[in-house]
Amino acid sequence: GRHGYAVEFSPYLPGRLACAAAQYYGIAGCGTLAVLEQNEAGICLFRSFDWNDGLFDVTWSENNEHVLVTSSGDGALQIWDTAKPTGPLQVCKEHTQEVYSVDWSQTRGEQLVVSGSWDQTAKLWDPTVGRSLCTFKGHEGIIYSTIWSPHIPGCFASASGDQTLRIWDVKTPGVKVVIPGHQAEILSCDWCKYDENLLVTGAVDCSLKGWDLRNVRQPVFNLVGHTYAVRRVKFSPFHATLLASCSYDFTVRFWDFSKPNPLLETVEHHTEFTCGLDLSLHNHGQVADCAWDELVKIYTPSCLAAPV
Image (cartoon, rainbow, N blue to C red; front, side, top):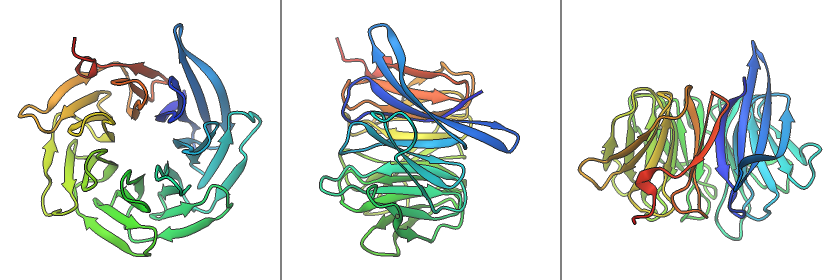
């Protein structure tokens, strides 16, 4: 079966989203990028693209509503255009191992993509140029997650199997900040949309931790409740203290770290590892997730539904 790894809502079109999936037979594999459209009748397939290795992450272009970038098990990034459904516009293959993470910068005026790989490097790309602009070295383990700051131009965070969260600036080659965040592999990170100094990490120790870049000696919050590794974490686009997480315990959980009892809701609608998670910018409270059970779900959890 096709294992869903990542899902992302279109920044342009309400109800459109992309899912990256991988299917492996022994060591051989293939990948699918599914572009889905939500309408009154439910979810329908708008476009489907195939790749000859598993696809692990997907990010929409921030300057062209038809363009997406995926990352794959063969060390490559693929640039796709939904208006040209034949194959990728471009393939950028420089990483020497699986690329688990890809993210398109939201900063106006610069079109930059960052990727993170099992080869322990992050790479900076201009999607109009076929080769990387820069390679960031320093992690001592797999990089699972690379995410641009929504506030600070040219700044991104990376989360790694070396148990650290790192902050980078594309204008300087070395790492800016190293945070030994967990005593376990860190699988995901995200930036708060309302505080440029605040990030969250999710790790194999089942916890989510919040980090204030002005004082990284200890976390500003520690959210426990998941029973297996936290696979992906996302801050809400609408609430400064609200976030979501999905896990290998098959659940998606919603949290408000400002509350004494931060766990707002647990959603259990998958029967396998839940890997992909996103919160819609267009439809307040709408969430998408995907899992290894081949299902993509779009829903509004009761804790995010507008108060009556």
